[in-house]
Amino acid sequence: MNNRVVVTGMGVISPVGIGIEEYWSSLINGVSGVDTITHFDASEYKTKVAAEVKDFKAQNYGVDRKEARRMDRYAQFAVVASKMALEDAEFEVNEDNAKRVGTLIGSGIGGVETFEKQHKKLLERGPNRVSPFMIPMMIANMAAGQVSIYTGAKGPNTTSVTACASGTNAIGDAFELIKRGDADLMIAGGTEAAITPASCAGFCSMKAMTTNNDDPKGASRPFDSKRDGFVMGEGAGVVILESLESAQKRGAKIYGEMVGYGMSADAHHITAPAPGGVGAAEAMKMALEKGDLKVEEMDYINAHGTSTPANDKLETAAIKKIFGDYAYNLAISSTKSMTGHLLGGAGGIEAIASILAIKNNIVPPTINYKNEDPECDLDYVPNKARETEVKVALSNSLGFGGHNACVIFKEYIG
Image 1: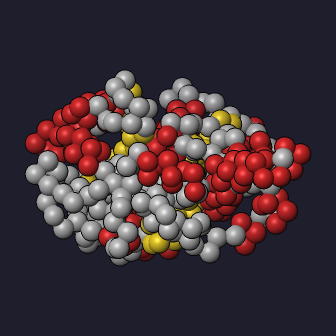
Image 2: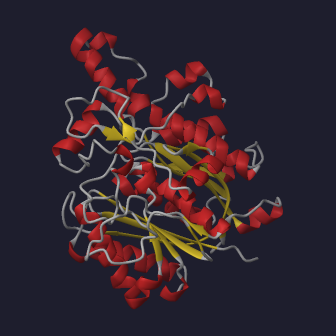
Image 3: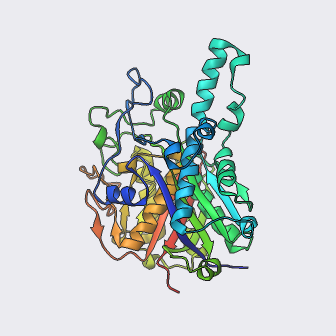
């Protein structure tokens, strides 16, 4: 089978807003979600800023208070974003359709907050005081498991754990499941909640994060020559992917069509991208080929754009490798300049940004772009959103371990 796949619903929990409208409004208005860390005392850390989700309580979104306490924050994000996406799609899982509805939620780290808290309890109070919910709260597949439990979806249910490519791999793998006829509808995306003491300490020790603590709003500055590391973010982005036949049968609204998915491995280094961005280039090439698209048909790229010295120049090189001279005609932006880097959740919210760019014919900006880098010389839509026709959009995600993933969406034409 080779079913056409469309997007019929979206849900987002992000540092710049909860819900599609608030999220999109913040992006096109260049609002930064970065501020001084409040989740823990970061006074001794080299990095003191992050993009936290504000005012989030799962029980405010229909999740039972008792059940919420038995879910790590990363799983709470996924459940709420999935509920939002299903409501947006006006789809109800029931006995008749449950076996044809699947769940695929990616996470790079899983329940690290639970792990840290319970390990502290183990050290301070002994093994008998560790929560019986520790394991089912911390394992990385539990977001997908909880989404399935809360929604009643009984179809394919799995998790992608590919570091910062997790959310994009989840959406891509869900796309393939529908294409080959294993499901009619997939709840797919990424989630992460890793702004925790140990997680941030580890990234600080790697010197991967920014130390621009005096200017939190300006700390994430992708493609700028003075970029000095990424800003940790948190949240979840979930899309409802559906076979065109299923969507048409129920008269669903259609945001756009998913047409391409590519993935590759750098086979180079545990954290550094391959020279010349060759792995990222291969993922984009595969996605274009699967979508039967010419390079000249691309309008917008939502870049991985982490604001690290290595990523941004090598992703730029990868784009040039695939698009050639046409790369200079592309609108490219990194919404991480506003949301920070959601790690495994990044692909979810960035796929949504790409779909909304098509729906609204607006490209969100790369904010904090002030200093040109000769190795990053493409059009990064600096500082202000741009109204322009967007019929085809691509989203890149590149993860530690050399994981590269790319998805492509286009305007739906019946």
